[in-house]
Image (cartoon, rainbow, N blue to C red; front, side, top):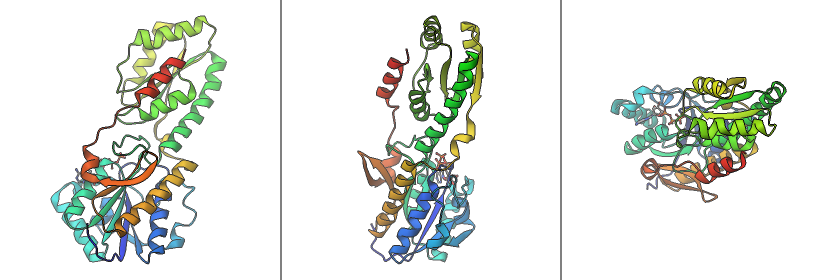
Length: 325
Ligand code: ATP
C-alpha cells in the first residue's frame, strides 16, 4: 500500500473487447476529475503504454460513449509486454508521463500484466471485462449481460424460421474454454440440449433421445446450443441430422455477440467498477482487481485473483436439463 498523492491516472482496455468497456472508461475519467486527478487514456492496451500512445482526457472526451459497444481506446494483445523488457519499458513510460496509477480493463492476462507493472512500482487496479464471464475472481464481468441478450435476440429470430420449416437449429456461442454464456443463453431460449466443455455429453441420451421424444409429442423445432469450447459444431449437427432424420442447420454466432449497445446491467456495473477502481487507487492500494462477489463491488489482490478457479453453475445446468423436456 502506498500513500503518495496521485496526479495522473491512466486507463486502458486490453484483450478482447466487451460491451460496457466504454462506460467503465467514462466512470474512471469522471471519478478522476471529481478528485482533481488528470485522466490519461492509453490506446491499444499495453502497446500504447510501451509506445507512449496516449491522450489526456477530460469530462467531455467521454460524452455519450456509455451507449456504444466496443472501446473508444481500442484494444490489442501485446506480446512485447509479456517480456521483462516490455514491462520495464511500460513502467518507464508511466514515470515519464507522470502516470502514478493505472486502471486496466480486461481479463486474466491483462491482470497478469498489471501485477508485473505493480512490481515495477506503478499502482495498478484491474476491472473484469469479457463477455465469457470466465474470470474466476468475480461473479460478473462487464459485457456478459449484453452478449447474452444479443444471442437471445438472434436465436429468437432463428427460432421463427426453424419453426416454420420444422428444423433443428444447432447454434454455436462464444465463451472460449468456458460454457457460462452458452448455458445462460441456452436456459433463456429453452434449448433442447446445451453442450458445454465442463460437462461430458452423450449424443444419444442427451440430444437424440430428447429430440425423438419431443418429435413424438408434436414438438416441431429444436434448438441445440454448443459452446465454442466444445468444438466440432458442424460435425455435431451432421450427426444429429443423421440420427434423427430431421433437417438440421448450423449457425455460428461469432463476433456479433461482442458488439451492440450495452445493456442497463453492463452500463451500471461498469460505472460502479470504474468508480471503485479509482477509489482503490486513491486509498493507496496497488495490485488489485475490482470484483463483484456476494452482490457487492469489492477488491482483492491480483495474486489471489489469479489463483482462483471458476466452476460452471451446475445448478443452472440441472435446471436447464430438467425443464428441457
Ligand atoms: P480476454 O479474456 O479477452 O482474452 P485477457 O486480458 O485475458 O482478456 P490476454 O490476451 O490473455 O487477454 O492478455 C491481454 C494482454 O495482457 C496480452 O496481450 C499481454 O500484453 C498482457 N499479458 C497477458 N499475459 C501476461 C503475462 N503473463 N505477463 C504479462 N503480461 C501479460
